[in-house]
Image (cartoon, rainbow, N blue to C red):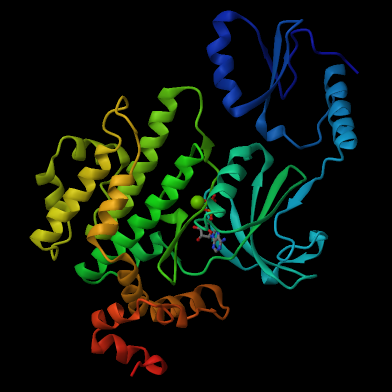
Length: 404
Ligand SMILES: Nc1ncnc2c1ncn2[C@@H]1O[C@H](COP(=O)(O)OP(=O)(O)O)[C@@H](O)[C@H]1O
Ligand SMILES: [Mg+2]
């Protein structure tokens, strides 16, 4: 075997060492994995797609590195995967069946399928990504949010043939994207109620991540589930990262998360999603409310418009100046929402109005029975308030659940 370690480059690698090449090297490291040899002043770069694959040995270093890795696994008794909830996924997860390979959804990089653990009979949503795409913060941020019940429960994750397989709770409900695409928000009163509940939930998730020094990095309506009890779950942590030493990156990442929340809120409230996070920032910072006003759904009343501007301005103020104390802190906005609106009651009203629609959609999409506990909405100590707000029509639509 030829040793190509002295400046040679194979198909998969290139060598860079020169102070003028530092920038280039740094750039490469974002999309590649590197072996650094300080004695020989050499960095060998492999594209991340090579991670976890079998390839031809190009040098003695390659051989040594793999030996080291295998010995490390042996000595530390390192597992290939971990189960976080053994009531949902059995240790022998090789016995998982794919339940007809039902697809729950797909994104740019992955497909989420429904699988059944044949030992336990429990269904999971299984997401598979390439090892090259994997980042530890993905799991760290996920577990942090899932502990606060604001993300789908992560049941297990494992490494398998160059891929990382994650099993999680099957979420009920619909993504905000499908709600925006659908016809649920026919009148502005429902739209405003739903957007307030969603904003409250999104800010809770954002704040929880922020407390753990995480940003999500990919908040959009396709990555947020609205469960039938009008509860928000944020998912898809592929881009989630721990905040770094570098304050500039942190400032941008925090702001981007919040701008995406602003866009979702504005889209649900008014039918207009501000086109992009940059446009959102420009319009709101310039206080260009005239431009915004023209884009909003026509049935919004003047009071509803003013309220929208007020909340949007409060949100953008949280990230207007990187030097401000508590940059990115949205506590005041959440407080305002909770003081101004009876969010729990809004949720109950929305659940009653939207439940049927959710159930029909779920059955259509998943072809499986949907276990929604309608009684959750009703078994509530705060019932009196709720009844006052429910119209006769709402009650009629409930069928068997009519309250005397
Ligand atoms: N736990 C889950 N339960 C039900 N549906 C899910 C679940 N996770 C993902 N999905 C569906 O799959 C889609 C893609 O999932 P996501 O994790 O966002 O993948 P990607 O990283 O490719 O964007 C989601 O928009 C959603 O519709
Ligand atoms: Mg996604």
